[in-house]
Image (cartoon, rainbow, N blue to C red):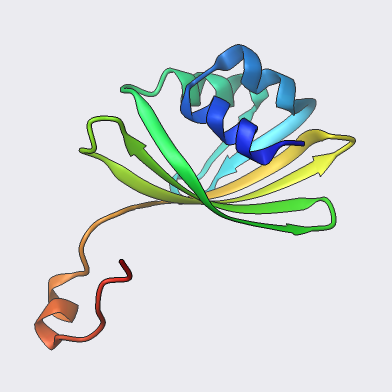
Length: 122
């Protein structure tokens, strides 16, 4: 499975292409919002999400049948930015399960800024 192409289709909200990556019994969990989707529900949630999106896969690790990806997802107008860590289980070249953790990008909380600890990663 081409994980970069999968993410490209997800970011482009290409419903027809996305469906082909999944086993018909696959599930997707978005843990940060406590949501469990089947494939069709995931496609609705992803492809009907408002706005135009872009992004970049920043890291991929593969352990047996599990892909772990870290992807920077942002609105094309650059007003919204997220990082998502995805655990994607692939069996017979089809996605069987996805567990994702989404985080809003932003500045450190004021209490840490006030302590003058840490510095920007990039």
